[in-house]
Image (cartoon, rainbow, N blue to C red; front, top):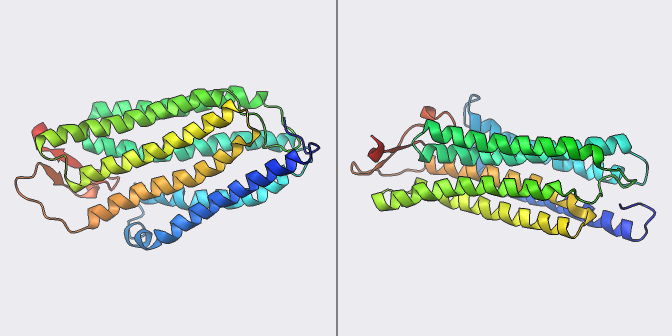
Length: 291
């Protein structure tokens, strides 16, 4: 366990964490700036009842507030004073924010898969079970792990609990199933002739990109855990920004495609319907082969 008395190692660890904390904030702000025009055009124009509008605003602006607050919280929690109660709250806070951010992105991916499978009730149940099971896993691990963590005077720097590895496996399994279902439907579409349409290609491309990001993120966490590196907390900072960037890009890309002029032939097997039909503003897919 790292102590502020362990100079200069403690100072180096705190400095590294502060750099990562600020760098992750810079990433989030940079992505906000380059997508601001698309946000104004495709998000702010949505009605208040829009589910994805609020989900976008949460991922974008709540996560931004979280990252800004970290710039103040980190120096306070690592100043060498005894913050035992605050440390426990920090651990609980990190667990909750991490899971909500991950689940928000997974909900977007799940809705896309749900649309690909023609709003199948059975697929909806499978997807709901996946997301809820992951949330329950995190809640259980947090409930049993947080009380066992011994806070130090640097508070946020502790050896990562082994339960993180188990949760990482659950997270990757969930992401793999979501991507696998999308790719399966894409493969079926290729054989039927509708798999190369812009919408299906977008769903598979975006889903694959998010999967690669999450896989790299989990591998980094595993490396920190294997090394028993007390700086594992830096991955929490990056998770906040990466989930914001990934989730917001998923939403904006779908909205931009839905708003773009397109020609549909009578013989096409995919019909683009209004977003009101699915309520979540993803263009729903209706497979002629299913009718």
